[in-house]
Length: 330
Image 1 (cartoon, helix red, strand yellow):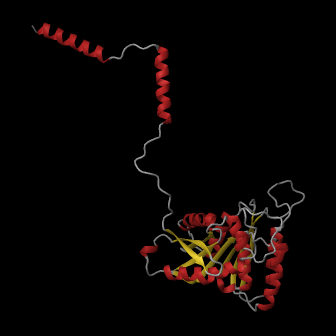
Image 2 (spheres, helix red, strand yellow; image 1 turned 180 degrees about the vertical axis):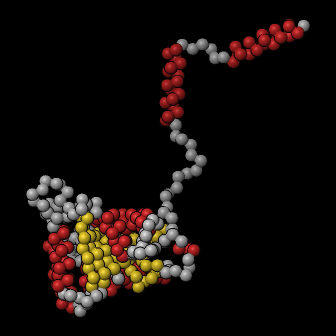
Image 3 (cartoon, helix red, strand yellow; image 1 turned 45 degrees about the vertical axis):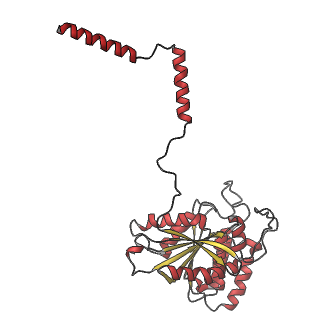
């Protein structure tokens, strides 16, 4: 009886197994089905447990500020140092940088990388000065960072229906001084007696113009590759006029350029400038200031080898931070 029961169970299992097997399929049909299945799987979007979110830099804020003198809106980016909330008794120096859309995240990253290792740099509040809302970066900086309307007349506008405009530098500097400074002083624990300016190219030109006309607006200036060639070198005429009036220019200034930012006719290296000797112009600017022997003006100039106008800015910032905000243990 036991043998018969075993046989029946075995037979029943065989039937179940046979029923569970798929019917025989031709090889070509099987391959076609597999390919179609794989294609459908690849084409189907991968389900996500949550919707994607914008990436936000830690300890950063954005404020929109209306410029009273020009009737334009500007975004102001703010990055607070690590531990800011844990030390309510502390105040911090403030670094203001132009071209914030590019420069702000770069400086923030360099500051945290350099500041957290070795001697590092002193903690500071970073303020990014962005472009006018509704303007392209090129259009906004051409207008806001240049001292006069004497720009290159051959330039074309990247904003259809709006002509190229230069010469808004003085109005923009007033906006920074009269509106951005009070905003930062009111909302953050900022040491407004330790303000640092950083700008590159047209941003460097704007900083140079602020330096010679209102030197105490900032205590330190990091001027990267200043565009002194603008307006047929009109800044040198402005420098001459300013020096005739200024009895002193109390400020610390660092000017940095890339080693390729000059003309080398004998070289075939395309990274050299083809027509503008920016290093020579910067040397001329420094020499004219030094010739005046201002008692409280301290100015340095440096070049960074193997860097051109487009690549030098990270090196400018690294050097500038180590110069303006020396390490915690220095």
